[in-house]
Image (cartoon, rainbow, N blue to C red):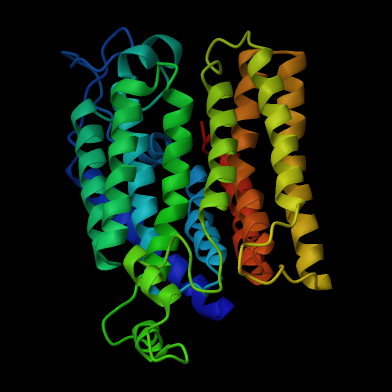
Length: 382
């Protein structure tokens, strides 16, 4: 897929991801704030409405730009060009990500009433029922989009949705919370790989699979195994998406571990561990790791330059805020470290794509970074 067509597909996927939000916003009933900053109806006073600003804060739209790169990095890990399935995976990921944001604030509404009374639900700008309805609608929209990419994609998306709901409703405040978030991001990258590698009856991949045979007249074993797996674990002569998913999951685990202290601060250990993880991930991303049975990755100048630049951007985005939070674990600096870790996912995704031999895809992903940075100044990603 050419860069211009890819950007058009991404724009369409973002639009699809926000359809459920618009529907929920239109149906959201106005609420009256209580005198304590909660959501109980007040007998008198103005009735705030759930306007665009409130929904943007609830859904943390500035973090939306960290999502498309998951699917694109998954496609690149297979050695495949992004296609229709990739665009469907991006749309599904956007919906499920925003569902998790709405559900997160719904589950934390009592806690936010004390620590963050300015958030949309405790401030009364959005009712708990509207937030929960948005989470349900966005989850359904995400699964519907994934189903259009094939049954394997729907299976992965269902696991992703279950992980998101389990995290928000049960696991967030347990030791398993960071691991659950890491699993969700890893599954999101695998969703892009599954959707991109899925074969359609009569499509080019299917015809290629029927036509491949060894000299003895038997079908290729590699093609058979690829067809059985949906083409996402390993494509014949191509790569596996699992290593990239694990690297992205490790970064997510580190950021989530720090985010557990962003309201009160006080933790030096979490930022230090996250800083060490960031350095290790940067080194691992730069290291060449040829796949068994696959030629060593190209060492062309363009690919090497892109990989080095994207990895450097990742370290520069995540590293300094974590260092500041480790030296002074105050809530503002800890929140800044979390925000930097979230934005750092974009250059990490770009580096993973370049590492897989798709520097152009990585460049497209990096194009989302300025948008995320600009919008983060208006709407906090945390």
